Length: 298
Ligand SMILES: Cc1cc2nc3c(=O)[nH]c(=O)nc-3n(C[C@H](O)[C@H](O)[C@H](O)COP(=O)(O)OP(=O)(O)OC[C@H]3O[C@@H](n4cnc5c(N)ncnc54)[C@H](O)[C@@H]3O)c2cc1C
Image (tube, rainbow, N blue to C red; front, side, top):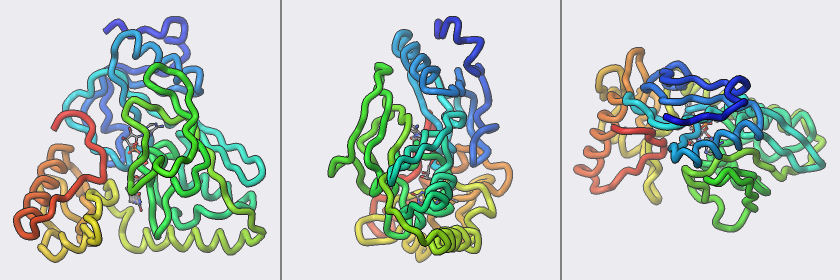
């Protein structure tokens, strides 16, 4: 591998053949050939440009709360955004860097008398992940409030994506796996009722804790809801709760959530999810689609 960021190799935290299970929210996954933790946009752009020069494939990881990382080696460059932090507020515009936790962004907004994002309270993961997958809950999505998103295209050039009518859709955005989200600007609503917004956000967070969402490592909902249906309800009716492969099990709280009971591999999760897809196809004739991202080979 001739990947070389020159003088920056001393500055940028770059590891080779590093086990991704150490960084994975689900505690599983194989090695990354190259794993980099850029601290700022300059380092990020340098990594992307070097990857282009050497035709090295790039994968971006945020909080990994929506990503099933293969147990097999992830070839090329894996960029973790965990050190890309920073929030600025100008009037009703809040600009957050990709590695900021979405939950921190909501807290910061409330602190500065800005409301809008409260219903997303408690969704784990980063701004980059929330924008890429248009994370949503309780009838709203991150994209609803995005005014623009700055990103690096595959050539390492900065681009700005405004909020067009088709930029965001159900758990999807126009960003591709070749783009790296740098920061997102959320246009929020000025409100002096900070106390009420704080309470509302904490309530949504509390519901997540009370419904057992954080009891075991998981990726939240594994499958998208089929049009007009609930994937969790269908799976529950088919008796999926408690089904397991190795250490991966369908949660007793929500049949659309697969949990790591302790020693699951990513392959366990994949095989269990395939069993669920087959079950729903056979009994209901419905094709379940993954909501989570599959990274690498399965
Ligand atoms: C307990 C629990 C509850 C959850 N509840 C919800 C919920 O209510 N609603 C919901 O929508 N989701 C939910 N999720 C799923 C997940 O938290 C969200 O989808 C979250 O937004 C993912 O963010 P992340 O940073 O962890 O993304 P990751 O898993 O790291 O990445 C997800 C995808 O985004 C891409 N990506 C990440 N950062 C960038 C970037 N900077 N630039 C380009 N691409 C990037 C990755 O390449 C990958 O394809 C839940 C998960 C858990 C574990």
